[in-house]
Length: 390
Image 1 (cartoon, one colour):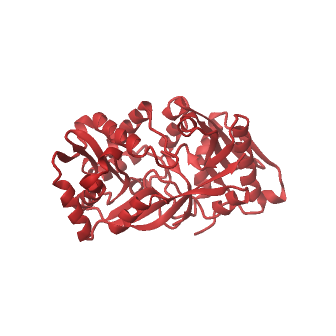
Image 2 (cartoon, one colour):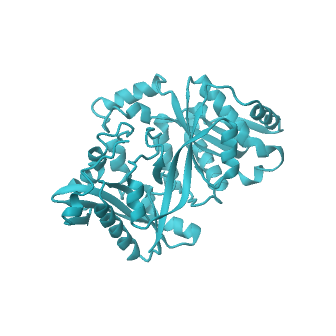
Image 3 (cartoon, one colour):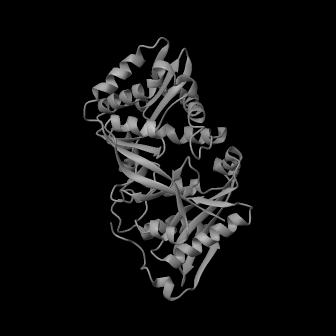
């Protein structure tokens, strides 16, 4: 992979690096547009939609900021923007885990250790001034969004709602003293192959359980059904490393965002006697539909995206959630995850998909990782979260 940037020794030879908080519309635009400068020679990078990036960074309207504070910073050298970073305190995370952890995110930088050091020092100082004892990241903004630094699989384009970065970021953050705390695995899967016989047998045994129904999310009741999905999420994931529950405001924002791209056949709720027990949610990989839009929906990008969505031009998906509530993990219902795996596989075939990505899973979630391997998944990317004591 090409190492992009202005050159490793630019600022090391002339150490006049300034890092300042974003205060103006112009500076926010520079913050958002920096990746276009850094990734212009990276064939795997997918330009995010500019409108979505602006909305995400809007502190007045992003529900994340109902329980968090953040600052955005730009690094400049001789009048040129050479890096960016965010520093954030997620009070909900700290309440959930009884920690005083701060986070950094939106980290982008030229290939220069002096610039990365200046950015991370600034973020750490901002967090330290607010009583934080640990800096962790990258999270943009939380573990429920784009999390971790890509440390292998650089040649593959990112799936929807996943990040991408050049290979020189890893040594830059390590040189500042950040150390690995957790890896997230991404799994490539091929839905054109046959489902393994062992998985089929387990799935059929589970399917016969009295009172079990597996149904799709209903487009006319999307708010109700997405609420059920994230009720299961908040229950099933609560003991996972780094878990932070979604708030009602964040849920409402998710519903709004999902309306355009949700494929009901890939959004499943398993109910036992009418009670939500497990969920599986995959989103069409819209990154494959926006890669050539260069971040712009207007004037014609929106029409292109809509056409590709409606005409089923997207042939891959990202399975982003699959989980079972704790109280339904005993007896035969312990195989609910296998049933949902097989059901999603079949539905992917019916939609004419060729496969996609299962992501992400924690490196220490052995049961889930073994299950994915049983279904034929291959680990092809790793995202890493780092931390350092302040």
